[in-house]
Image: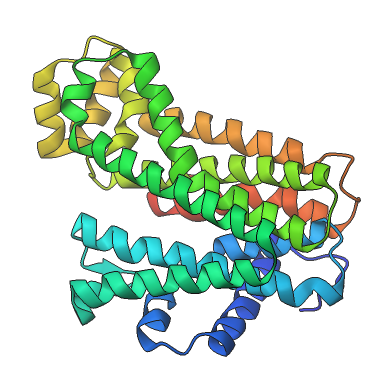
Length: 324
C-alpha cells in the first residue's frame, strides 16, 4: 500500500504501519528475549504515532525518526507487559507462554529493564525534549500501575468505605495514567517528529488521551465479561448501588463475578454492556471531535484519525459480541 493513496481505510493503514514497525524492530533489536517479548504485539501505539506524524504533515526526511520513536514506544509498552505478567501471575501473553515462564522471573525482569533502557536511548538520541517526554510518561505509567495494584488489592475495603464520586474519579485517574498516557504520548511524539507547532502537539496529545481511555474501557468490559474481578467493575457497581453496596455482594462477585454482576444490573434496570457502551462512545466522539480540528489539513490522514477510535474499540469488544 502506498502512503500516497487517496482512499485507504484505517485498517489498511494499520496493517502497513505494523509491517513498517516490525521491520524496524528487526533492524534495531538483536536480543532474542526482547524479540520474544515483542513478538505478537498489535503495534497499536506505534501505529498511532505514525498516523499522527502523517496527519501533522510530517515530511519524508523525518519519517525514519518517527519510525524509531514508534519502535521505542513498542519496546516500552512490551516491557510493561513483561513486568505485569510477573506481578499478576499470568502465564500466557500474546498467544504464547509469557517470557518469565520461558526464561524465569529474574531474566524476564532484567529483559524488561533492557527494553526500557533501549527505548530511552532512542528518545534521547532524538533530543532532550523527547527524552523528558519519555521519562515523564514512564513515570506516570508506573504511578498508574502502582495505583492499580493498590486499588485491586484493597478493592473490598475501598468499596465499603468511600464515596462513589471518589471511586469513579480514582478509576478514571488510573485509566488515564496507566493506559491513556501511552496513547497520548504516542500521538504527541508523532507530532513532535513531524516538527509540528505546539498547538498541533497539544491537540494530538488530547486526541491520544481520549483514544486511550476508550480503549481501556473496552478492555475492562471484556475482562469483566470474562469473569475478572478488577477495578473495571467500579463503574457499573457505582451506577447501580452508589454508596449502598452490601459487603456480602462483594464476596459473591469474587466467586462468580460476571453472572452476579449482570444479574444485579438487570434487576435494577441496567445492562452491563450498555453502561460501558455509553461511556466508550463519549470518549470516541470526543476523539473524533478533536481530530476534526481546523488546525489539521483536510485529507486522508485527517479522515483516518477520525476513523481510528471506533475501529480500535470495536476490534476489542467484538470478542464479547458488541459493536460500538
